[in-house]
Structures are given as C-alpha cells and as structure tokens.
Length: 135
Image 1 (cartoon, rainbow, N blue to C red):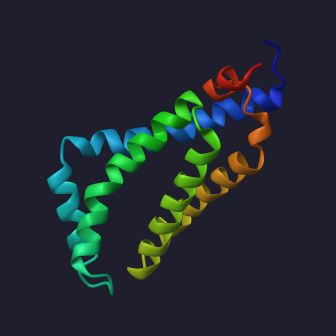
Image 2: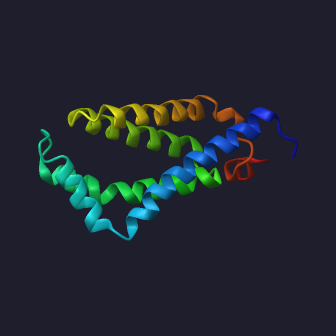
C-alpha cells in the first residue's frame, strides 16, 4: 500500500491524539475515586450540580480510554473523532465555568486537532477502517 505524506501525517496525528486520550484515561483507572473527588472539589464553586460533576468524573476516564484506543487503531475514526471533539467541548465548558482559562486554551488546541482529523478523514488510509472497507 503506497501512501502519501498527507496520509502518513494524518495517521501520526490520529495516533498521537489517541495516545493522549488513552493515557489520560489509563492513568485515572487506578485512582478513579480520587480523580472523581478531585473533579467534585474543583467544581464545588461552579453552577454545576454535584451529581453531574461526580457522574462526569466517573465516566470521563472510560470515555478517554475508549476514544483513545479507537483513534490509535483507526477504527471508527470519524465517529471516535466526533466523540473526542464533544468531550473536548464539555471540558472547555467546564474550564470556562470555573475560570480556568489556561485549561480552556489547551483544550482549544485539542479542538483544532479534532477539527483537522474530522475534516480530513479522507486521508485516513493507514487504519483498520481502510482494511475493513477495502473491496
């Protein structure tokens, strides 16, 4: 399979985003309770109800892990990237609600990467998606 530099670059960016998401989720698995408690304490002064923040703190590591794994392998890449972008939008919203502008700025960089992946999905040749859809 001959690939273009754009296809190779796309695969490397997709995998890098996947490793970042997977890593975030993976390191939190061993400290789920502590992570959830940290999220709740961080958002205690926000307008968000505690049960919403607590639920998000419990679910986020699993979302990050799953999205990361899908991106690394290039499986359901388009849908995984949209899910990742939605996670980032939720995180940006939370960062803004507690006035963590530096967090929001970093998350905007993730949003740009997801924009690139989503809008250039036609370059996703080095992936399980391509293997599945080859005829």
